[in-house]
Length: 345
Image (cartoon, rainbow, N blue to C red; front, side):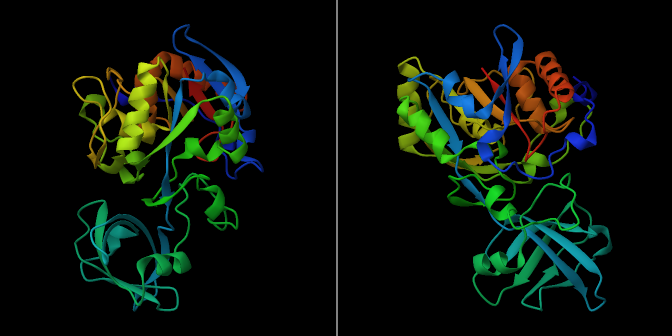
């Protein structure tokens, strides 16, 4: 299949630029795969679509302030760095703009010279390797100088506002390491989690550190030639046992987000059971893939021609997904990270 078959028209004004005042006030489009239909609902009604034997799986990764604004030394030219992967405590792979102008050995400065970095490679690849000089612990330096790594389609005069560090983070975020939020989880509140618990619906957690692979553009014309870069994940023994037990009781595994689905699908053994595992997943899910661990999926609306749109199309079918997206556009749903969501049953 050609990537052009996963395109749709989206008016720019439907791209959510700010989160709603309440996380659980989002609209939710509910898709029924069996009947190939959909209807409009609200996220606050999410627990009503589940039964007592179901289990909701949350990605507890925590976004760190990975965006750095600095200058080139000694010229003072503006430089933007997005940290992507920590090689060791001082060496990182990063997106650098304007990366094509920065040769090996270029020196960068951040803040009031609290942080310095040297570029270690020539501009032949999209990701560059940076060697940092840190006067203190990495986490505290980034907390002071870094910004929330909001997606580029959120266009503001000031990219980060006072609420982003809280709202571009799930309420159950624990394990630091993501450069993008698992956005389907942004809708959850303590009240929704309490309602699930009262209904006897278990929640459990996995970790997948959302990396560049999740949002990197699809560059292959034929989708079978596309591959998603590896991301680090962990499914604990306790989580694996919970998921397998619920399946045996006839319950459904409800993945909150495409990142959760990718992690879960990377753990299924030859007997159809979920194994505890901590590793890098290189799994790429495109139409034709047979899901073995995911029975239902809560997800936000995704960019045209993206890996995430390919994944949800694999789960529900391309025609059903694109039809639902057209409906969402007509009904003025809010799209992307701070937007509304879709529950696929």
